[in-house]
Length: 307
Image 1 (tube, rainbow, N blue to C red):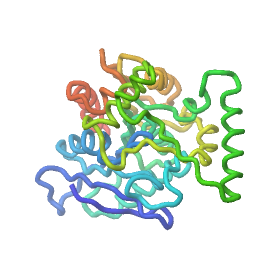
Image 2 (image 1 turned 135 degrees about the horizontal axis):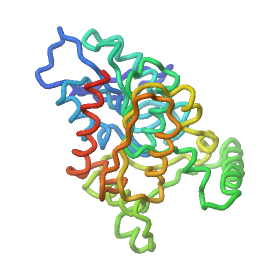
Image 3 (image 1 turned 30 degrees about the horizontal axis):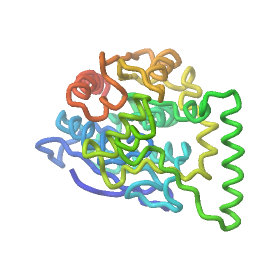
């Protein structure tokens, strides 16, 4: 694995490039762009779990930090803007096709959690992606619109975002939200019981998955675009590439189980499949060896066939 950067306009996007065992620069290899979850970073599940294992199977894997996040450039920090996130994918391919050892006709994409939703959007408008894999993909816009599940949740949030952005334009301190409790113990003290938030806290706020850049922080004033985003918009028309979806069999409040089936039903892809990993939660599929092995046992043959 080697650290590198590629450009998204004038920003440097930081990435880890995983190379196959016995890598020979005189050969050409298929490649996969691997995208991290919301609030995550390349050193966590997209790189150190899925990226590393796919490289062992003969793929060049590019796991990157989203612009304005992690080691990538961009100010202010902690922006979660779907348009910016999707452009990162296109720029990742721009970089891969300049590498002599990458076969430009054999590039796939993999996204985990919110990165899975972005991967779908990117593949619909960048035909250089020949195969699409998702692990517990979440339609981030759907999740943001639901909010507290009231009919006006989205409108109320947009009103608050507008007020905060105006305040910041006038000189107020930015509002940066920590979207998870500070520790598993704090989550317990707060009486949090939802499986996804509890397990997210155990993953991101303990040695299980903790990394310096996996901070799960969000700049509230820039959340407007996410509320109006639909990761699967036009999938019925534009998503034609082979598609492998992986979800856990234990549904949680983030909704990756139902989003996986919605994607399956909406995609125009002639070749499409969903694997439900029995007994696995959303976050088991980030790190838990048995669960991630089940996911990879579906993804590796899928990419082998289609790349």
